[in-house]
Image (cartoon, rainbow, N blue to C red; front, side, top):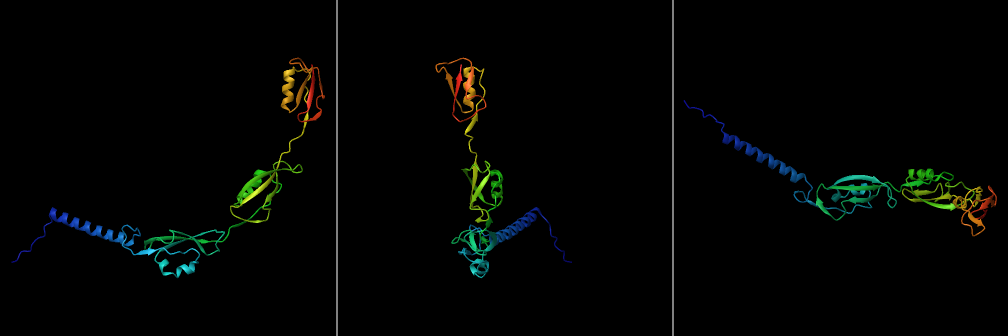
Length: 241
């Protein structure tokens, strides 16, 4: 009678089996990484030179065999210089050598992004600037003296309201600046000391003149012009001590 040999599991056999499994799994992972990676350092994929694709449409690119070897990611953006449907930017740039399957980002033009300059005439400066910026336009401000328009309101824009402008274009906002009042109401300084009367007149832009002219102190007994009279800025006010 022949005895069957029994298979004995020993620590050595367990270690051998585990090592073999590690080698097989590691080899499979390395093969997967090298066969799927597009990293030029350790990929086994073929080299591909990125072609120049700017200026072409999507249909034209889809028919080019060298482009089909790349993984193309499509994007859209406005462009003032390229017609809608035409590629105007690519990443990476043309001429670079990469591996098959490398991601190539192509940006297709949506055409020019035209905006209409809104009518902000008569609006306050802050409101007008906010309205223009909400339309995607940049702004600058120019002040202009115009006594017929309320200060800090918009006189006009350049370009004018209703004009077509590209997004980001600068619109000059012409704003009425405040016109200084050339007149002052003469304050009442009678009964004040000469020093206090001088300070009060200088604060409103008037020139105090003491009478007698050599006086350095004293109390104002009268003044010319009289209080509440309208005079121009820098007008002389005579103080009698």
